Length: 136
Image (cartoon, rainbow, N blue to C red; front, side, top):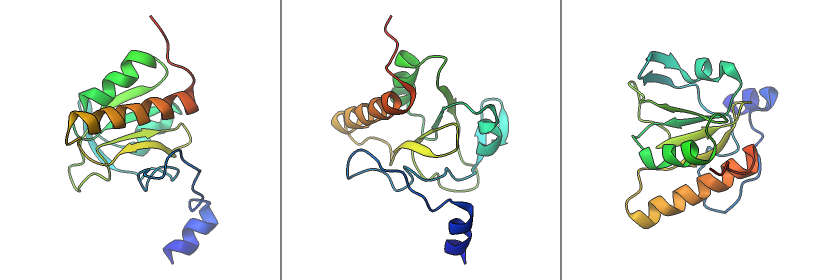
């Protein structure tokens, strides 16, 4: 039944991604998570009402927030949050204004090399969807 509902809503469409190891959420609509943010409890859908790109940090990933804040300030909103009622589907999500996931960190980076690869993939997704980074 869920498959038929996704077909009717167009939610089964998965956009192509760069790299074979992309997170399963990439290219799909972001789940409407209940979130606890520094400004209070909300849902992802409410955060997306501004129709702006959003980096949702669900695991305290200062390193991925820094990537956005360094190259895409003012173009991509960053929100640290946690999922109070379930395990988060990823450590961080980059959500396009249309609600589709452009990038996702599968889990906290286990090593500096893994963190570096995740940051590089995030930079690639940010550039592909939202333009080149700003340079100081």
